[in-house]
Amino acid sequence: MVAKLTAAQAQLFLDANYAVATTLRRDGSPHQTAVWVDWDGEHVLFNTAEGRKKPEHLRRDPRASVFVFDGGDPYRWVSVSGPAELEAEGAEEHIHKLSRKYRGRDYNLPEGQQRLIVRVTPERVTAYGV
Image 1: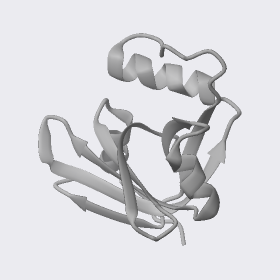
Image 2 (image 1 turned 90 degrees about the vertical axis):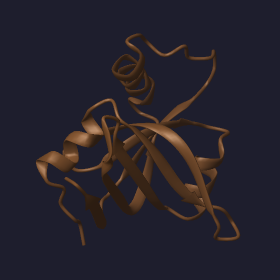
Image 3 (image 1 turned 180 degrees about the vertical axis):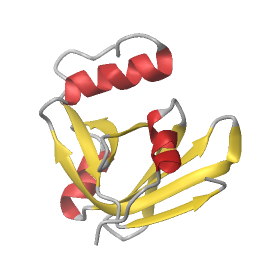
């Protein structure tokens, strides 16, 4: 079942707010990392690279969670959890888009690095203050 975000909830992912992505290690324990986030109207997006733990975890167990909070008011937050898919197509352009949003410039992409877009389909949405 796909859950819907309100426009205000989605806006937290569209604005330059930081988030925490959670994937599951082999033993089932959570692995959390700070990420830049985005919203495509249907999925929560973040970007990672081949060789990192997040893709390894998601290929084995696609369950993920992303928690974003309003940088101006940390008591306004949204948590989305659901299955995640990895996609290489468009990932390099996406990391540049995110870098411009958060840092005002293109991403300093290491030569040969393969970027991946992670698309999380909302199955559960929890929010506070928004």
